[in-house]
Image (cartoon, helix red, strand yellow):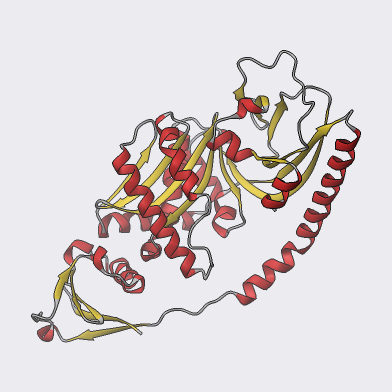
Length: 388
């Protein structure tokens, strides 16, 4: 769709322009959160004689419908809006505290589960949570982004997706460090020791925090690591006085659990009133977009149901063998390795699951590599892990 819009019009993505490039002044007089009425952006020096004349037909995509805006393009324009993809968010400003949000959003069982997972995570690993906001060393930034790319590629592969990385990731890497240092973005990281195991990139517009993208090491999924990282960011958002946590596009189960409000994104077609050709062309593009998204919304539920039926549920089989403790001595052929040196993601996950079920600290385990298997020695037993 983006390629077609680039050919047909001057295509501008709201999120890229306003959040990544910080160029809201290019188009807007002001941007406001409609829930609270508070300005998220206001131009210091509006154009004295704004004139849209001579420009191409403009199409703005990814405009959140809950954000009110005033374009700084003059009054001689027509704006046509079409609903596109669904989004979701949390109205942070409607809760007195993070604790109130938890109580109103999750029942006692859900809150207890999160607390259990957090406690087990801390018990089994050397965990620390860091939110980079206002300062971050370039060296640490590169470490975090390298880890982000590796985890994302691994998760894309697990889902059977052809692309191994987000096509926007290189742009995120290029621009995010400066935004973090200027408090226009934050990066949330959960570390196991010095190794990042969960990361989210979040961009800021006024008092609105946009959760752009996130990933985590699936080896730790038994601990609900993605949910723990998200709760950390939500709590931080309350502490920092943000009004909205925006989950943005995409329909995922976790968003339905954590969000309290849904909204549609808009695509806006903008063209001149007095230019006959542009008015005809602009209205034609608007009708084409309207038809496209009508078909999209009409078939979305059908496609969602088919995707669930055709979802690939095959798993890589892993052989786990328990051997007598007296035979658990190491041989010269076996090399002592650290957990991070184990290449098989399935073996790593099996080990983390073992820690979860047995409340066993990772530091108490020893790992040995021999050809095609990993030997794990704990205080209780000796296990052999082998991919099939």
